[in-house]
Amino acid sequence: MTLQFLFYWFKNVAIQELRVEKLLPLYYEGEKNHFGDHIYEPSKKEIVESLIPRHLNVEMWKYLLESFASEMAARMVAMENATENAGEMIKSLQLQFNKVRQASITTEMLEIVGGAEALAK
Image 1 (cartoon, rainbow, N blue to C red):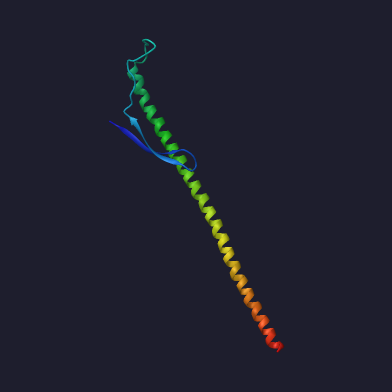
Image 2 (tube, rainbow, N blue to C red):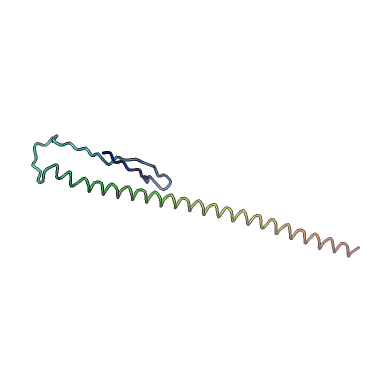
């Protein structure tokens, strides 16, 4: 049985990578021991069988934390971009408003000057 997990790995705030990691099967070297024979109490098999669920639990927790950190970083970047876009939009609208206001003032002044010249003649 092969068990793989797909998750987003948090590299930094701007980069999150989609990764696949294999959880099962786990391989361990059963009888190869470079330091001589050791007696395990409980047996090697029992130790490995008790560690596999713990290992899977820790790995799943790691994947959840990595995915959560990636999601929060993506949200932060999106909100930062939205804030910058809103600021640019405010500047653009303010400029457009000022141009329309200036045109209105200029039109009013031309009407006043035109009316004053008509009265002067």
